[in-house]
Each structure stands twice: as structure tokens, then as C-alpha cells.
Image (cartoon, rainbow, N blue to C red; front, side, top):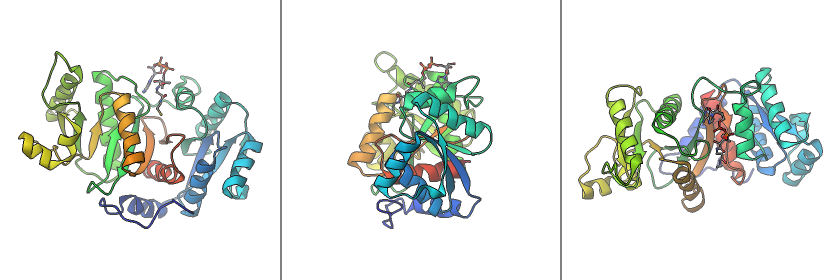
Length: 310
Ligand code: COD
């Protein structure tokens, strides 16, 4: 299948390939897909099936699913189809499949992110966990020597201090599950100076870093505020005289708001051509949550990460 699980190894040393190889050896999962009538979603699900990661239950308009499958030459005989018209209705139906334990994972198809998230947040019929839900992106890029995790590009619009703490804890939890024993977390701002007057997010970053120093965030090294160059580039830290266990070597970037997170995500995928995965953390099951315009490869890698987290 073109574009999926390429042989090419980035500087992160084929991290996604190793992740796929690891989860291939585990028990196959089932994914319920809300509005599955989209070519890249179907290609990603077919690749997940062929790689022994997961089977798909496709919820949506059957005719539209058939048309999309024909266009990308995916054989639907390997999938269970659940007919459901309408965006909100398809989201609820896919969630019902998960709540009935017929699937262990949920995936967004051709529906809007906000409608999908509202369905998950529904108090009676949704999939809320006990804490905050947040989006996590994982990148493998030739210009960085290890996988890079980043949150939040898609769910929490303008998180307050408590929400940023939860976002950071969710990301640390996922990094542990994905094999990073003591993740280095950079709390991103536009500068490394704490500036209560002009940049309130630098104060949040400093508070969270201090909470982490006191052991309140679990097994991780956390520092901030740091600008993106200070988080990722040792040379910029040398020039600026920044001394920190995290600076220049971050595993996780926590963004101050959705604009910063979403912009970083799209620059990584479009300009840096990073291999990318996107998942939602904090729900009752891991949720595959790529952008609608993401490639089949990103959708496949998002499934692999969600399976690894389940
Ligand atoms: N985790 C847990 N509970 C939450 C969360 C969260 N991250 N967000 C909201 N809730 C709870 C609230 O506590 C409340 O009980 C209920 O859900 C409703 O909250 P509101 O009033 O903020 O809900 P909405 O419907 O106005 O907004 C929720 C969305 C997730 C739809 C909204 O935050 C949103 O649109 N996010 C961005 C989605 C998006 O468009 N992304 C684009 C980039 S791809």
C-alpha cells in the first residue's frame, strides 16, 4: 500500500516501525469508526488489518462507505458494517459499539472534530474518563534523534493552569506506556523568562515545573517556560546559557494553547514531513484522532499508537 509504513528510517531510528512490530505480536484489537466513509481512513484500517493490529467496525452511510472503498480499492468483505445516517448519530452509534464492549478502540472518520469530541463528552452516552481528555501527537522526523510527543493540538482550546497540569500528566502517562521511562517535558512559551506582566503562560509553566520538582507529576523531568528552540536544540541553549536537564533534549512539548499546538502539528506534517500520529487520551478507551486531511500513513500510525496505549 503506497505511503504506509515506509521502509525509510528517520533519525529517530524507525521508532514507528518498531512500535508497529511490537504491537503486531499482541492480541488483535477492534476499532469502531464513526463515519467511516473516507478513503484514507479505509486504507489505514486495511493496513492495520493486514499488519495484524486491529479489525474495523465501520459505522456510517453504507453507500458512501462502499463508494469510498471502491475509490481506494479496499475490499470491504473483511469489515463489519453498521448502517447509520447523520454525523451526530454515527458518532453516538460508534460510541455505543465501544460501550457494548464490541470494540476496544474508537476512531474518528469523516466527521468534524468538535462533533466527535462532543459525543465522547456526553455525560450519559459518551466515553468520559475520570480526568481531563487531551490530544497527543507523536512525531518521528529526520531532524530529531528520538520520537517527539506534543500536546494539545486539537481538544483543549485555552487551558488554565489546572488543565495544563492534567494535559502534562496525560502526556507523561502515554510516554511511559510507549517506552520512555523518564520523559523530559518542556512547557512551551515564546521565551524562557518568567514574565507575569506580558506573558501569563510563562507563570503557568514555572508553576507546573515546580510542581514536578516536588514530585506531583510522577516520573518525569519537567522544565519551563522554554521556547521551542531551547526545548529541542542544544546549540540554542549554549548560546543563551540555559542549563536544564530538559533543554535541548525534550521528549514532550506542552503547548500554551490550541493555536500553538495546532500550528506546530501542521508545520511538522506539512513542512517537516514528519511521520505523525494523533490520539486522544483520558477517555475510557484510547481514541484514534487524526486530522481529517491527514494522510493514510498518519491514520495508520495513529491506530498503531492507540493500540499500543490500550
Ligand atoms: N476533558 C474533560 N471534560 C471536558 C473537556 C475535556 N478536555 N472539555 C470540556 N469538558 C466538559 C466540561 O467540563 C463540561 O462538563 C462539558 O464537557 C462541556 O464543556 P464545554 O461547554 O466546554 O463544551 P463545548 O461543547 O462547548 O466544547 C467542547 C469541545 C471539545 C467541542 C471544544 O472544547 C472544542 O471545540 N475543542 C476544539 C475542537 C476542534 O475544533 N479542534 C480543531 C482542531 S482539529
